[in-house]
Image 1 (cartoon, rainbow, N blue to C red):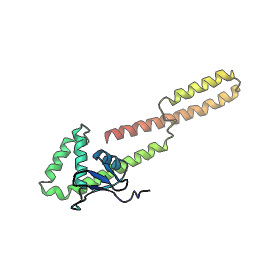
Image 2: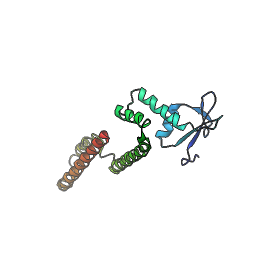
Image 3: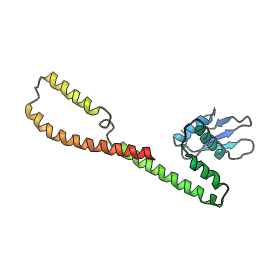
Image 4: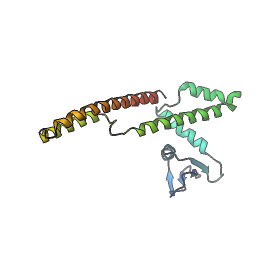
Length: 182
């Protein structure tokens, strides 16, 4: 079992092949990108010189994604990054970027927690229709055997539950809209 708290060590050989020291196999940039998406920290070391190449390879992964049209970084941000290397602002930029991404990560975590706290079955599209069909089927199968008194007693709480469900759906739609804006 691997220790996910320490970085996954990847060694780069002279042939430029990347070697995963935990699984003892060769990996690609896409594999490394997958490790990172799964929440794993990665450290890439040149086997011969011992130099840390992590930053270089992470930038290469970002450049590959951007060149494939998976644009995450707006052009203005890229221009500002280039400018930060040539101005005195460079001392502030790394801290600002780190804090910004930390806030973004925290915001996403909070949204995902709220979404996770909602019962996923009841928020599933078409759940209400499926529930109504099931009730109609049961009514048809029992021929109305379930007492009429029970039907009227259930109608009022179901209306309240339906209102609660509509509120939850509304909140979920608002959260999805906020996520889209992020």
